[in-house]
Image 1 (spheres, helix red, strand yellow):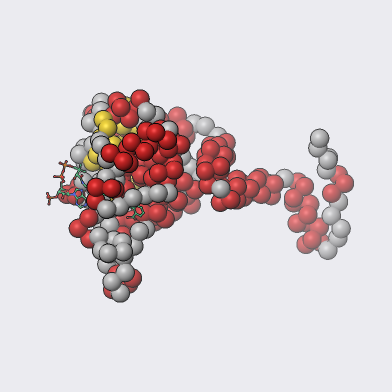
Image 2: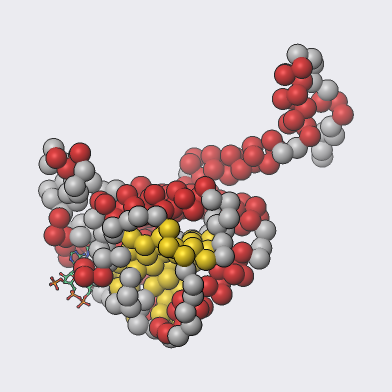
Amino acid sequence: MEQFAWESRGDYTDIKFEVLDGIAKITINRPEVRNAFRPQTLFELQRAFEIVRDDPALGVAILTGEGSLAFCSGGDQRIRGNDGYIGDDEVAQHGIGRLNVLDLQIQIRRLPKPVIAMVAGYAIGGGHVLHLVCDLTIAADNARFGQTGPRVGSFDGGYGAGLLARTVGMKKAKEIWFLCRQYDADEALRMGLVNTVVPLERLEAETVQWCREILALSPLALRLLKASFNAADEGLAGIQQLAGDATMLFYMSDEAQEGRDAYLAKRSPAFDQFPRRP
Ligand SMILES: CC(C)(COP(=O)(O)OP(=O)(O)OC[C@H]1O[C@@H](n2cnc3c(N)ncnc32)[C@H](O)[C@@H]1OP(=O)(O)O)[C@@H](O)C(=O)NCCC(=O)NCCSC(=O)CCC(=O)c1ccccc1C(=O)O
């Protein structure tokens, strides 16, 4: 098995955040519960993805789980209260639970850099939805996928239902949720739920190779492609993200800068120098 010299960053209890040559690797580090998440895990994941977004040296992120038994088994059922998951924070002092995986799902979708789920073992429940919201999924041959919501009294009707149906088709998505079966890596590949399946011992090497290929490509083209792929499913928020990118590109033009410069110089803008394109 190829070993990589990941450099550890930050101070976390529930995750690991590591980098290597422009690649961020974010690992859910709770193997004793098959990498189930609690509110703290999700706060830390959000912090790490915020760093990935802001660091121009990072171009792609890997989301994975510690060990080879699980990517993530969803919400930690031991701390599930009556209205969400009970953490250690201020809100929890008032007995109020959180469903903050939803914030993380949106953050991964909006991240202007590709995110690859690197899945060994189980991706189950809310953990399954987490791989689903990543842009690509590379599965080890021991990976197993499924939803358990209707069995444990939960459901994810957002990305968990809608994006799953977009990914594998409506009938298959309903089967996954209505029967709560598990699917092995080859079945997941056949239904388009993952991009490729590799032997477990090659999982990280293959994922790093995909990251390196991505890093060799235009970051702006990748950013616009990700926003474009997601736009329709995100509704107005998707249009807002694409339009924001259009604004950013427009700001880079002489035409937009003429507007700014004219305002600052207290003169009329000379927009007649710019073509009215067909
Ligand atoms: C993942 C399994 C299939 C793995 O099976 P196996 O390898 O045989 O291991 P086990 O012996 O079962 O597990 C080892 C150990 O880990 C504990 N554990 C595993 N998963 C969890 C979990 N999710 N929570 C707490 N603990 C867990 C297990 O109890 C064992 O501990 P011991 O002390 O050794 O006994 C299998 O473990 C399994 O099926 N796990 C449960 C999967 C599951 O049902 N997950 C929850 C689904 S619901 C969910 O994820 C919430 C979704 C959600 O987040 C959401 C959705 C929509 C809106 C909002 C939200 C939100 O924010 O919550």
